[in-house]
Image (cartoon, rainbow, N blue to C red; front, side, top):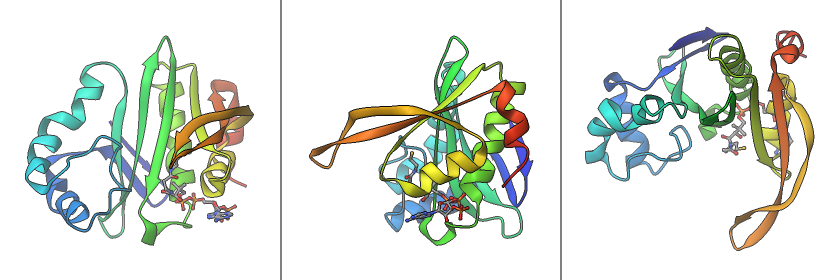
Length: 180
Ligand SMILES: CC(C)(COP(=O)(O)OP(=O)(O)OC[C@H]1O[C@@H](n2cnc3c(N)ncnc32)[C@H](O)[C@@H]1OP(=O)(O)O)[C@@H](O)C(=O)NCCC(=O)NCCS
């Protein structure tokens, strides 16, 4: 799977990413990696060759890397998970030094489109904490519809947080194709 959209190439992780992924771990910077990522640099090769692809092989989703086309640098990751009966959850992260350039918006729009048009999904959903303004904004600009709030649905840092729920279905793609 490979998508080229705007300044980004969005593709599966591969062995060519070993040096960059190792450097992220060494620097303690995990934002550009999926939630389940290697704990230590010596696990990177095996993770890139096998573990990161298990999700797809199990039919549960994909973990994808966002690469800045001009520099070849990994700037973030985006994934589809919990695929079940045509519905899946999308999640993303962008490295601190590359935020605010529209990368999360671009990737969310492109990967959701792929999921709905080519991936056999009828619904892509997103949950974001209501205080995560950057994520809410990226979802809105990508063309997601905010459906409501799950009150106190997430427990993090010792307290409960409200989660905003967004979705995109195939009829939303016209909106998603026209960035505001
Ligand atoms: C959320 C995240 C992925 C956004 O990535 P990004 O590439 O910077 O997002 P974009 O550039 O596409 O859009 C960010 C939008 O949020 C806005 N934004 C960013 N920080 C903001 C803040 N603190 N307050 C208000 N708006 C903010 C930006 O201005 C932009 O909106 P605009 O295009 O209308 O100007 C990134 O901040 C991140 O990785 N955060 C940590 C991981 C995370 O929270 N993931 C999402 C979990 S649901």
